[in-house]
Length: 333
Image (cartoon, rainbow, N blue to C red; front, side):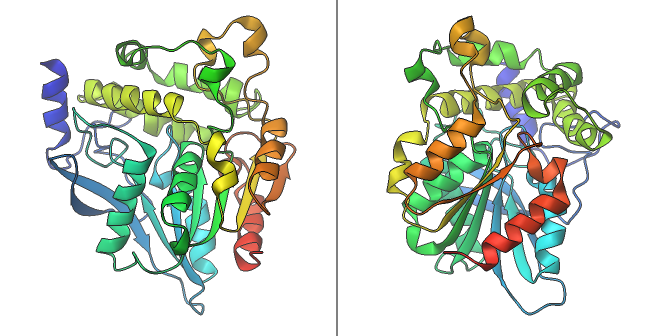
């Protein structure tokens, strides 16, 4: 009943909560651009998908870029990239996926990357862009989603950019133990700012922390500190199960669109690492090797590396990352 009550609370209109304590749909946390909502019907229920739609700023129109966030991120995390892209003449669309951030968090939902891709396609259809070519950029879990989107709708994708995508290795096949959704949920309920910071410091940022990272970690932790924490934890548990059981690595050779991989070499992200035996744990999340293997697997892919950066190069060094991204988008193979 507590999960159901929290899920119902997640469907209430957006309101404001105390500072650093946000509602289950990030009520109280302001995005850098106006948030819009599209109503979608999915799995026999009405849902709301939040998104940013930012027009180009003054230059000749360069195209439409769709930005897909990671599991511990939101559309707002693309703030610096949106500014750089719109300044270069791009229209930028950045959704919050169903189950995340300012979008609905249904209590019962069969999460799959194909479903999230279909939801994203429905958003683009709502905007009249379902037949238009787009440049698709996905970070972390969003990289897994972007790869699936490119497989489902290849004619629509002009260029695919994968930024430290997860799913480049099959954790379960390598021997990482399976865990139930209930176990994922129990772990998620323990999440606080301190645990988020410790995890990101170790896995994302190679032991270095700056105030820039603080804002986005507070954004995430604020949902766990707020009145809808059970709904947030439940959605995160369901999507963790999706990520663990649906690695994209086996499908990389089927990608046919021009692709660039942007890989921060200090990244060590691996889902389920905490359950892995020590010897296996030491081998997981080897992004220098994973990036090279992914680039070799995707026909004609280009690999761009950042030797001193980790899981989120667009957050750690936005100017360098955005320069590299714009170069890739303007000169696709």
